[in-house]
Image 1 (cartoon, helix red, strand yellow):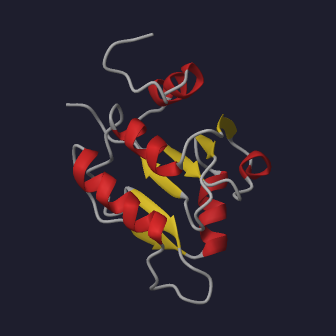
Image 2: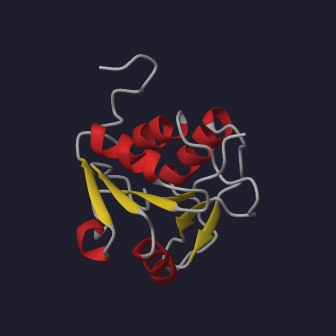
Length: 142
């Protein structure tokens, strides 16, 4: 056990977050996301929602403040302007937890999968809400 570290941050996830450098990306994925087959290391967090993991990650990892899109979600197929419940929740968490809050941007479904394939790691959560996926770009600690 560690003080002031969210217990949802498993040893594997903490190691991954610490190993990431500025500009590296991590995906927090819902239960439907093809996390294992997408390519990067897959860290399991089946008992947690994507929102819980997002809040835990942002408690220790800064978002990149040098890019316009440090947080990306997947567009709803057939309705790219829709804001799913999970994404609205993600935006609230970013606004209240991130050291440099940012407006979430979106990517078309297959562009999101391509971007995720190049991420440092994917955290597969037990999130059951549709479109509960987000890519975060790591920033710097001043």
